[in-house]
Image (cartoon, rainbow, N blue to C red; front, side, top):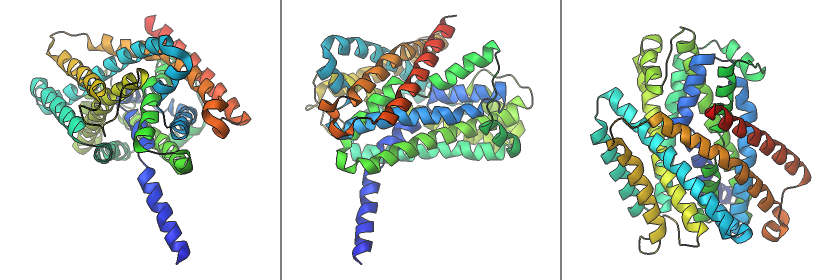
Length: 411
């Protein structure tokens, strides 16, 4: 009986802690990420599946360090940067992050608008309704309720698993390409490979994860359970990416169909994998875009408030965290109202977001590694030697890839 009570208490503790890791990693598959994976599957078939394994490992390394810092220090990443690197560095990084997040949030609304066009709903009706939903929910609901809602949104991604299965892939070929690396020196392959890595590990994720760990009240004592939340979240998000690539490779690539967007992919899926597969693909894309439109403004509000010492968090009321909610509202209104401007170059905005994030991530990774190895901050929770070797090696790879992404984008 005593053992059963202990196991029950542990199970309840784990259930209470789960959330930040899975939610943050899931939102990584936002409108931009899904577009990238869709085009990779449609243009290169199964040949880039092998990259999912090292990319997942790198994602786990970076996310785990940020979650650990949040649990041990009880402070967000922007807080720690301000305290240890000064206001000047904080201001420079914040300007870049706000610009990057603004562009990425615009991309999320672009995804919502694209779904509206597919199902025959005007963007001028759909975008204002979604904006109002996000505003009211964020201001009125507390973190615990919002987290439950975000968990519901993660189930949208199951539609991609079903779409992948319905496409009837050649599983032998899929598994072979997953475990045996192949690489092409063609210009298009290299650019998409860089995009593959560059869209997976972005600056905003690290800030949001650490802030949500703090917001939820997770401490070093519970971190051994929260760590699994982070690891499982990273694995789940790349399982979804796997099925997106598989669905598009099996149908669109195999039939030599040229596409340029997720909307094209969804329409192409209908005669190849059935109407249900197409509808599920669209359903997943809408859920992912909506998820991103919720999280990105909150993420921006978190680190702007933390960076300058203001109260932050969705658990606070508006009068208690005016800077937090004001930032959130400004980002949301600017991002959604962009679609009232005719002939707006959305592709250029998405490219600009990649460039800004690509420039920032090397600085952010170096700062994270300096903070995580500072015993005055982390005590006994600093990285051990092997963790540092892996973390620095992975970070160097990410830095090289993101630098290459920025260069090839300009080229």
